[in-house]
Amino acid sequence: MVKHSTLGLLSCPHCQSFLSLRDNLDNEVVDKGNLFCAECGRSFPIKNGIPQFINAGELEGSNLRFARQYDRLAPFYSLFVKAAFLPFGGDRKARKEILDHLDLKGGRLLEVSIGNGVNLPYLFENPNAGEVFGLDISNGQLKQCRKLIEKKGWDIDLFLGTAEKLPFQDASFESILHIGGINFFTGRQQAIEEVIRVAKPECKIIIADEAERLAKVIDGAADDYIPTRMVDLLPDTVEDIRCDDIWMMHGKAHGYCLSFRKPK
Image (cartoon, rainbow, N blue to C red; front, side, top):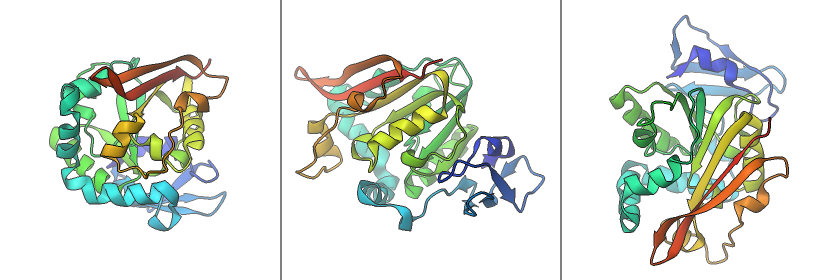
């Protein structure tokens, strides 16, 4: 369920104006209702505690294809990915290679493309994880993630939305994490600009994904897929840029982990 205290962080993903909650109830959490943007007139439903900032008719390109794909894979996606990571030392090792780059000091952490929550058990091993928020493009994945959250008793707000139009106010998060997916976003440049916008000054941002050879195996990339080095999409204003090879096998990197900071 989305908390009432979270609503102040939200903004319209189209015009970035504040949102108001219709059908406001005097509960600590909100499981249904509508978020309304007075500036552009759009309304966003809250279904089963998850604000819905996109609908299928708004998606296009790779976003539409992969939203459908992850909806279908959602019930057994965890098993699929664990099997895919076996050659790299297993799921824990593969994910810790990335999560260990985070500079956690409490505060709010946003995971873009949280999926079914496969990173959460390892993330919460760090006592400085702070308050976690998760966004994904797939309703199917979010439903699986919610089951995990409820089983574990974690306090996490989930949102259906795209990385290219994040539904959050400027400078809302102390840490931002993305693992998997950006290679195939419809608007990779826009997604990077958005995570920088919602990051607080000095926030460390982590973006990791498969290298081209692994992407074609795991995600079924089209033959004409041409990878773009994410580091080339970063604006000149960011600091402490670092890009590490990850998921090594037979002397070759099958993934990358890009980290950088928003300037003061």
